[in-house]
Length: 147
Image (tube, rainbow, N blue to C red; front, side, top):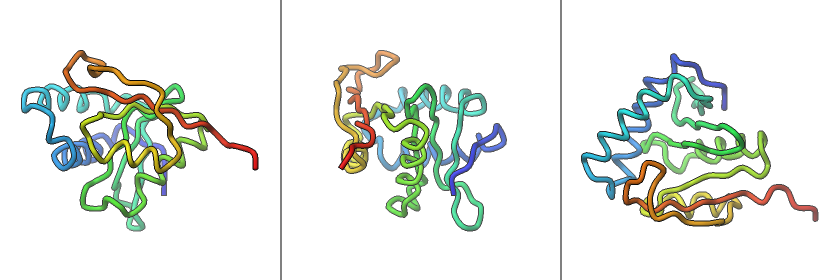
């Protein structure tokens, strides 16, 4: 189930973010990981958050979606491959059929995940939005196509 998040969801979302980054973002330096963690923890209570819950009502993933763009999407690594990320992407595409997303090039799970859901590369930046040396791939979904 996908539902709107509230500021009360921020601690669980941050725990998901931390676990997912530990599992998938080994390329980040310890210093950058700590800097980003502070940014994420501060922003989560104030952003447009969507929560993916399991049947028991436990948040297993979250997405920040704003301005037609998936700003963040993370799933608890304990449930990777169980459809929570796909459900969040499907929700984003319902909100904006030509949604955009940026993905860390070095996160080897990100590009295949988005491409398998129809996103196409539109560009690449050498550094992340804060100028750190982590290349970013820019993607966009082409929207619905007529058959």
